[in-house]
Length: 293
Image 1 (cartoon, one colour):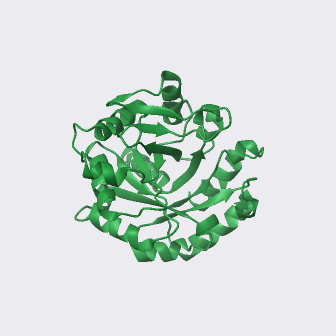
Image 2 (image 1 turned 180 degrees about the vertical axis):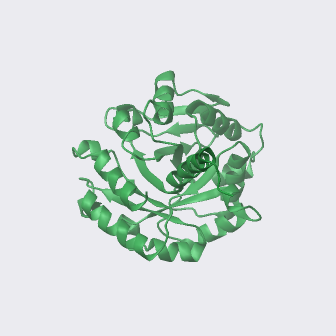
Image 3 (image 1 turned 90 degrees about the vertical axis):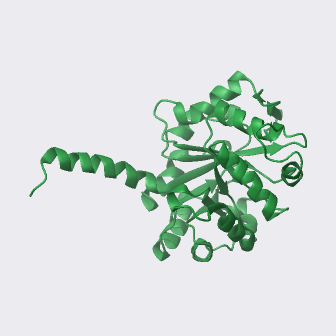
């Protein structure tokens, strides 16, 4: 029996958003979001943003590091409360809520300093300062995930305890590796054991394919780890210009990887280089939209 036209239309309406949302189009926002062009970032077609970076202090408080001349590092959560100020809160929340925003996932990126010590004492309990601070920050900034940018410590057991603590308050966990594949293999095994893919706690891997990770092959990484990679390239920049790529160069590299296997999407490392260098968010995002529609 032929389905009525309205049923076909309804099915298409349900399926199209799923297919559109399947591929990750990501950009990292390194340095102070207060000085960024929010409209350009949110209306260019990116659907995933990673704010770099925050850090956990020895007492469990959370610091947002601006890394920007004229800006100051800000404690954003302390004593189980958000203390980062209304202006910063409004700016961060607008990344998803601003009219016309295409962003549906917002992450904060951090290293692993103090994580091992805090998970040992006082631990990951709901009454601890570190737990309450991450819960408060999630609510204040409307966050979806915490991104692991550990490039020094690589301690599996404490990272697992920390990630599971975050999961209990509703965060997803992500990672930005450039090396030490075995560490991430262990995290995936521990954090996603027994879970359906849609329920994975560690659900995204953004693979650095620039600087120290310039030789990385995302297809080899995902074949090894069993999770789709989101390769990252660095936009044109004046910090390490030999690692920067134009939109055309990015298209060539992303397309070559995508021709060899189904990736999770693509993304860019960006120290607000796009604005500093007079480049276009839309051009870089357009590459991702064409290669990873």
